[in-house]
Length: 126
Image (cartoon, rainbow, N blue to C red; front, side, top):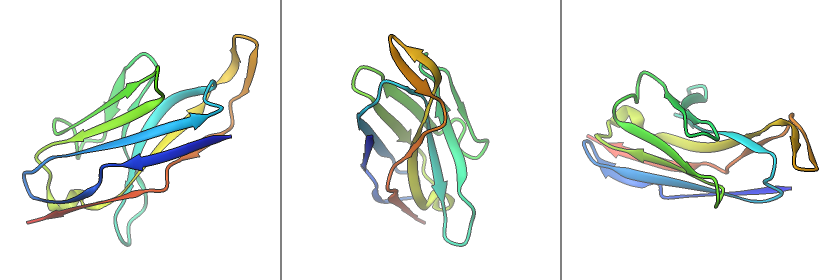
């Protein structure tokens, strides 16, 4: 079982910065890619950023150049540095990790599990 804990949200004025953190604990041997998603009221949840185990990252067009995703593999932590925030960035942000399929040492990974954080509010005022 994997436990997920998010922190770092809050309220900020437009142009400000926030840093979100997400920690995965428990049976984390099979974790591969990590993601940040967000969901604004009345909107569908959308992908914000993804970072693979080797540190490669991709971003949605709406945050590219302003947000930076990173991870600490040794501590199973995921981060999202958000700069030049805009009111349209206001949403509940969710971290997520996916499980790889295969073996990590002698540990068999099934490849179907997905681990979500509880969500954390980010509010940007104009």
